[in-house]
Image (cartoon, rainbow, N blue to C red):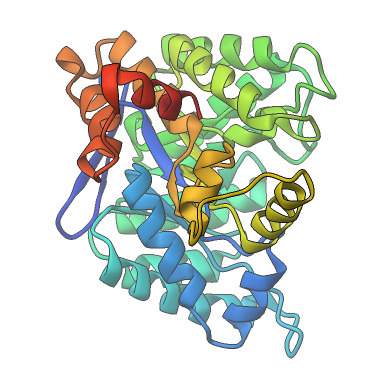
Length: 352
């Protein structure tokens, strides 16, 4: 069986066909997060700290670290990103003990992360573009780390799954020229949005099977790409992930955390309830309020995607005897949220 080994100073994560699905937490990434980008430029790492701890608590087994901030004071990422990557990697590995995934389009930032990272991180990423192959594969060999291989090349991203498979095969073969084994290549076959391409899901499942059977490599993806631009994205993601796992996908870069309900939504709902003439118990706190009205929680907690993944692990016998599934579903009770008479309270919480 193909196994990709990723390590921190004290923990090992194994990506493999006979292993539980590897969740790579994506939250430490300023792309599309203006607040986080501004904080990082200002030297404020408070959100990074919170996201690191919350993702591990929610079940991430690896954390992706991306420091791709375009500074207002200096728009050259080749100068600003390497030192920032070094700081973020050093901070995160001092907070949590899971392995890291060093993620950047800037080769200097990748090497900066590799230099400071303890253990054996995953490198994200190499593509089939000639320049990228020549820049990244020597780093992979030098530091003896596994790498994410993205199935696009100098012609761009093809909508033809056969072309994307050919690009992945090319990367695996070129890596072999550097002495990098196939088990250290984790292929991202590129997930297209289902809203733009009706066959996107079928393409990915077919590609993953081919990558497993013909190249013998592990696979990953940006899981939320499948639902981009659609309503109820969690519903689509929850269906997609177990189906991808059934096809042979072994990891995903994703958000494992259900984001907490914020004060603005709570205030709006309280006003709505008050306008309807509903009288609430005196002194009801925000957490009790949002649970009463099915608004989630004011606390970070595992997202519904994590529930789907854990169930799929159980169903594919990568959670022997369902130990992790049982532990996951006992967590609320262990935190003092007893099930209520006859178990009905617990049933309501599981559906929330």
